[in-house]
Image 1 (spheres, rainbow, N blue to C red):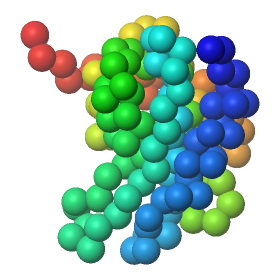
Image 2 (cartoon, rainbow, N blue to C red):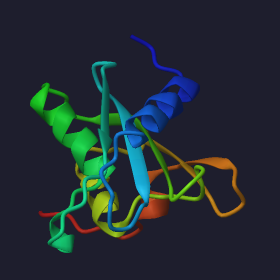
Image 3 (tube, rainbow, N blue to C red):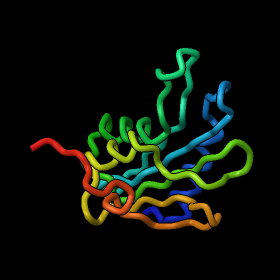
Image 4 (cartoon, rainbow, N blue to C red):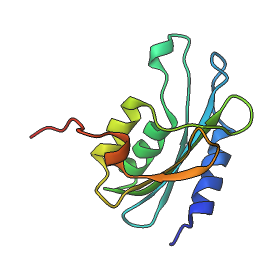
Length: 132
């Protein structure tokens, strides 16, 4: 299955609608295509014990792994408190994406100008941590 960037963004936008974020009201959705062409989505889920929440990207990656995916080909991240606005993956999610990315992985996100941008994981997480 081929998933266009627009379809990936739409899937992330749809997932964002299901976010559980009663504390921050910051809704995030993520959608990724794995190495087999399968689509996986996730949304953020907050918790009253605030650090125990989970990010949309982590949820999408967990869904990919559970379904047997090994590598992220493309991932779109959509977030904001009202309308969709600038939202790139947090530092923890950049590391999570890195674990399943390669030099060809594309990360789609809206930057501060309000425009969609394509990033590599190297651009978002230079000199990243990895185990030997």
